[in-house]
Length: 276
Image (cartoon, rainbow, N blue to C red):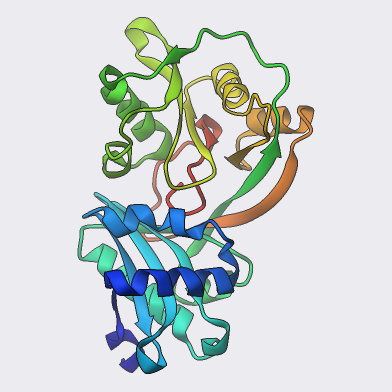
């Protein structure tokens, strides 16, 4: 209870301290970008555990999407480990999300974090892998630039693919910077959009050939690009192997609560390993 009571939303002064903890916990030098969404959105938060002398010893970020919610960027400073702080941060994050209507809590776990989440009742679903490279040949597809008029179609396809209502994230991306495939009366058959926060490109597609074409457009070069793909998407994995992409890292999707009707075979790219 003492640990839990000391976990609370970060103040502006504590955000740089939270970034430092996450960097030392192994999240890399770009983690500050990842924190911008939960920092600024009314549907997200950066939770911190108070350390000695007014410092920060642990961090967990949360993002609420109606009946679902995500925990991400959870890390504990090396000097504060093995004291149950990771579990306390997870429990505090779950409470924050439950208070905002999240029936199912989702996260992507490392192998080190997996035992902690399993003890708290999370169950495993599927692995997602980050890949990096430059795309090669792809199915010929007519790609259109996304415009504001595409937002409703984007949201509809996103709900079909993820089983979630992620409007809280999608509506913050202004202007839209991405491409889509128009199916006429069937609406958007696919879209690809980069975010201001993560290295990946989110790609949703109703057909495999459309998804692969959007993957190719997102990583056409000349510089290498990053794609994060569920292992359950065979068409995406086949394309990445054919293009000789390099596997960077991976994480395991886990959930606490009812299963979400998501479609990994239609998810050809994730924003990041925070909220998918």
